[in-house]
Image 1 (cartoon, rainbow, N blue to C red):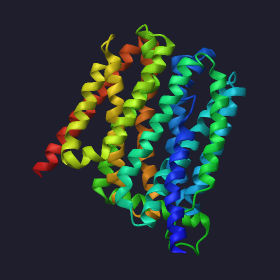
Image 2: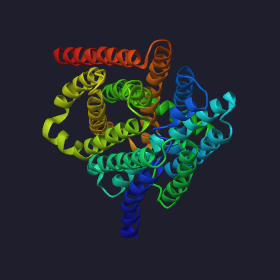
Image 3: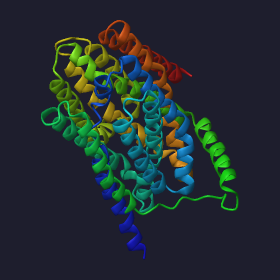
Length: 398
């Protein structure tokens, strides 16, 4: 019986790789902003819609994380895929209604929150069930490679075969999400220990939320990792989303823009693949000192009109490498019964930063130019990195 359970949890990892591939072979990934602009919306509108997405994510992260911890990570992940189907439907058939597009981005935000904490929690605890949680960094690195390979496939296909066919992108994505749903359905739920079984669901949610907040607030190392990740990953995401407009502003065609996004994802796949080896060789202290500085340098180099795409591609490697390492550090100090909820605090922090900087970039891009918006982002990242380095140096002295 134990061998059967062990094999089931091992199979979870393989099924998760397949799920990651099909879920992230998302043909809308590099074109949703271009799709909205093509339909008559402005850069300011795009910024507002993205802000709504992150407000929805901010509001939904911890509640959906609690759902994952109390009802099961499989349930939460399947709800995320079902929500995304609703988003696709609204983007296709409600595109001319401003109100329906707002609803679409609210639902899209919720779909991501159902996945964000529960996805990592299900994988980590599957490894923990078989006593192999020390392999999480390696497994998460492979997951990142799968994610980025799927992104590369999508962007190259979109650039070669589907340039301008944006409605088709949404239909293809919906079909692949059906397969992703099946992969989650076939997984085995992990054991989630709780001492609140006799309470009502509402009381259990309240108690679990309080417990989760105490875990985050009471662990300075965990809180620091969450804040550092949010402050660095949000600007890279903003850079990526507006890249389609930025490279077209610099004179590149839509096809070349999609290829740059694809090479960014390919670079990120390499970052995920080498993450565990780099961490073993350099160690946490060196990584936390050097990687943020490399982030800041890369942001400034993207401003160079002719060769900025090289720095943009390099940022993919840095972000992916740092993501894999950071999430391993966080999972080491999170108890299983609150893993999805605590990881959702990271998603909430990320969304809070996005809400602040993304619409400002859209406004700056609309009123001046997208290059000035990228300059604003480089300044923000530099300020963040200087603060992080000062904080780290000060902490060593205390």
